[in-house]
Length: 359
Image (cartoon, rainbow, N blue to C red):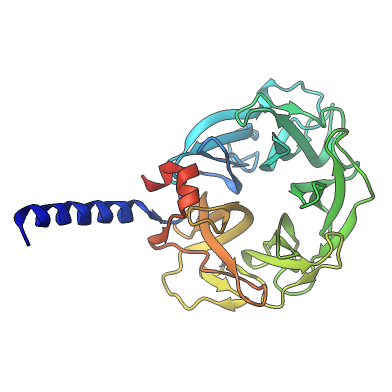
């Protein structure tokens, strides 16, 4: 082979190797750049990922003052995150609104071309005390400004928490949420009118806490649909923090909890992992809490889990992401929660939409 041909071949080989290298997305959990609980991620059309979650201080009384509101973060590559500011700023709210204090588990959804932030809050003042409940804000741009559509009254007249939205194939939108601060927790569903921000029906009970891994309570609903089946993720703090799921062929149920729950999580005592309802045999497992998940389209085109984790050597909540998939029987499979370096191949369409993933 001539020197010229060898040179061309070498250049082509190097170019191929460079392209192949660019297709790899590498990450390591957890990510301390997102110090949030209950994180959700939106893969937006502007080539960036946006995240919201419960911002520190999580609990008022930790010497850090009240919850600041709903803070938005963005990233081009799911690793380096930029603070976009408060989309709902508690300090700017009137003292008498019901959603003044302790913002909890916000989510961000794009529905019918607009951006909806769901949030949970209450007013803790003696003058304007209001129970914890669910609210919704909307904007035409992901970074706002957001208008609170539930300014005068929350979505429910009774204590509620952890609101999420799901848009079905026919365009109908449903609200899933749990009753808050009660002895027995249930997750409910009701069709939602986005124009009036009112339920179109009485909320229907989907699942309840039961003896076993979710005996102490359930929360953090998030719903996806796969091949005609609805998957309802939820979390429980019974033994640490963990995620399970239930399925239904009708969005109003009946819902059936998966027999191998919890899907993944951590047992606080001894920092032991759990997956498919069984202990993870790993003496180096670092987490004491893993849970309250949401779902987004990840770098490889699959659905990915996003949630928060606490390490046994660091109580700060941090973001954790991992892909999941469905086996031939419709069971969810995942390697979550990982803590060692991970690598996946970037899907070409995701790379076109989010070129920063190759960074």
